[in-house]
Amino acid sequence: MRRSACRLFLQGFKLGQDSNIFTNLWNKPETKDSRVKEYVPEVLEESLAEQRAVLQESTSRDVIVGLGHKVLQGIENKAPTPSLAPNLNKILIEYGAKDVIAQRPLSYLLYPNSSLSPDEQPHELVSSFQDNLRTLIESVESHGCSVRETAPSDAPPAGGVSPTVTGAAPRVGAEDGAAHLPAGGEVIVASKSEHEPMDVTMFIKVVSGMALANMHCGDLRNAVRCVDCGIAHAVDQQRLGGLLGLKAGLLIHQNKYEEAADSARLAIEASHNIQGYLQGAYALRRLGRNEEVIALLEDAQEHHPMNTAITNQLDLVRKDTKLSLPAGSSEDGKNTLSEQKVIEDSVKWGGGGRYS
Image 1 (cartoon, one colour):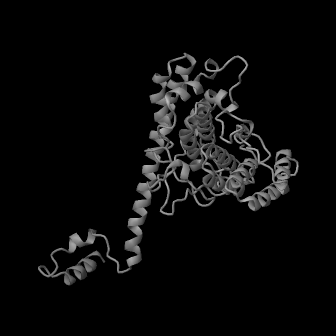
Image 2 (tube, rainbow, N blue to C red; image 1 turned 180 degrees about the horizontal axis):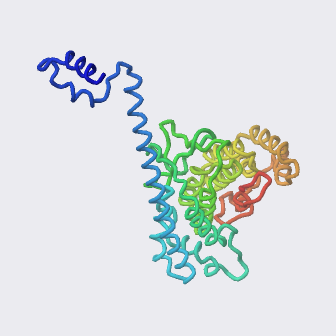
Image 3 (cartoon, rainbow, N blue to C red; image 1 turned 135 degrees about the vertical axis):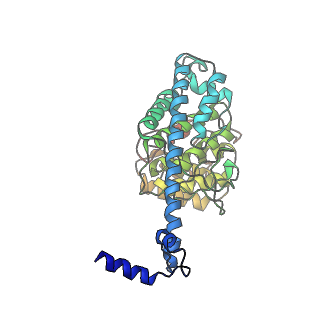
């Protein structure tokens, strides 16, 4: 049997006619199916992308955990702010935020009691900054860093961002702290069906505290940039609505009423956020769009029937009297920079359509 098989093989093999026959036996078979040729590179690319993602997450975890514990230890030892700022900045860069807080507001954020009089109390997100940062670090240490991929780098100034509630959230731009935007100029935030990782939730609390510290020290530009950092990563719609409502209030403080109205509208679309209604009504009033103000407040009353602030504002508008600024105003109509109740409410972690 073996001899017959060898004889048949040798009969079909003519030396000189196919000298590469043994080499060809080990070559990959060729195929005329172009779909297979296209499929193999795609599989390889997906595999490489997964490997890069794992490596990136591992590197981010090491940076956040290692430097995070140093920052926490420094805060406990009352280390000076300049010695803590570089490590804290490196942690924020892992989430795409860079240079969003200066030394003075950071000092207030790290050691609020040393900057306030005995009868003053810091905002909840300021006083709990150290605990929120610790929880963020512990979450990353246990479950990894949920870093989003970087989107195209054409980003307008932070005050001009107009997000829409659809798609996946882009990473915040590491160069300027503003959210990276697609060509249409819109921030694309996460869909309602996605689950928000714990480290993202805590990161949003951290940058929200930074926003309030910036506002306390009069740095409204960086306050808005901090809020944009949170918006770029937010998944929970209640939290997103609260951030957008807070941003609307900050823009009103800068007399950017058109942008404030847009941000308020998005806050309402996200979660019928109460601050979206109040800040939006004030911005529209300053723009002279009184009919839209009444329609907006009537819609707010429908979704928040027990809220007296909405009822009072609606009565004022209907009587054609001056709409009082929800975030606090002076007699000459200019906005104050103090942390007024409506601004504080927009970042509280409670229910009722607030930032939670």
